Image (cartoon, rainbow, N blue to C red):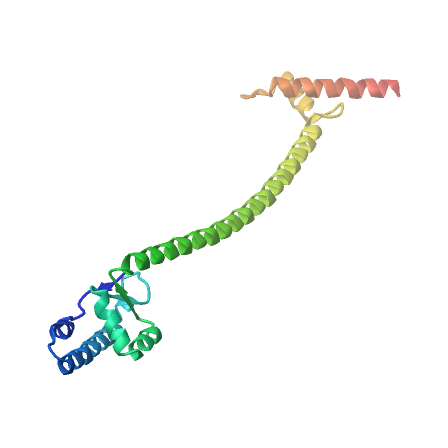
Length: 206
């Protein structure tokens, strides 16, 4: 938050120390003009637009003596309307600056909380979408694994089923004297033998 505290009170000092009405009137006019000029100067500098500064879109113009500002408002009511129309300068005094700063802080906290809620909603939605995509992919993997398992069982059955299955025939070649360097797994031999015996029994029954 940018706070300017360079308001000149030179004319106000002359007003307070004036010895006659004419001097008081002249000093007050100059005092009002000084406040107006300083506010316009602040507005024209656009401090809130400086790159790298994250601030509100107005500058707080601090007038240390509340009586000096109040007197100017009474003397020149148009000043109040000018400040009300100016979106870039807000006048604060000793009795209002703390309240103003606390109000800005509270607004910022609520804005931050609202942004966090919006981000939470967005992130929750993205997470939900990711979970849906994961579940779809997971189901596809299950289907592919099931298909692979079925293909494996089918291929194994073709090797080991029937009285003349491939595994039995291959083992017979070794028995007949074929030179081999590898051995067929015992579990496969047992399954092929079992299938062979079942097929032979089935043929005899017929």
